[in-house]
Length: 267
Image (tube, rainbow, N blue to C red):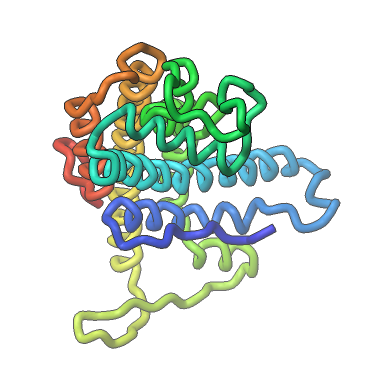
């Protein structure tokens, strides 16, 4: 069980901002992670366990959102580049790849000689191999099932984090004053003054507010994209080439990854 949250390995703007959030949550993870059985008892046990559980979910969501956006972009690019934007060519190829790798319990998938049938394939046989079936998940999924309101606790944690520092915690624990330092304009270390500390805290609070707004905006965008994908997936429209909607979805995905959407807060 790790004491820290794993950063996202990417240089894309969204990954950099998410990693900033992850860094800020690391203090809460380290303070709440259970280390011995005694951590499950006492007055603070419930609060610490809840806090730790939430950091696990937040980490999964941040990594999940970034990973899903990249996955969606790769699938759509593959659809256009390798399958010429043809829903049937894509679905037939994916179906064949799937049966060759995993087999099938459906006799209709095979010819009398045991080879995989490649002609006379019905839409029902292609249902789970279309590009939209690859974009959508029928299972419980933290990205698809998270609503913006589910992330209010994450925003509250970021705002609470902006109110404290490692120095505050060390001074509280030791009962002694702990000297802190900052880099001045000449890149030299000097003791932080009271004014420095106030300015840093104000800056941290402003950043937490901006990050909170961004989290909601990203969550709303993921909810919107998931709805678009799911609507087509659950309809007969998935048996069409859908160049227009897939191009639109890809454009939105890239805009989120590069934080180039109107109204997105740049942090």
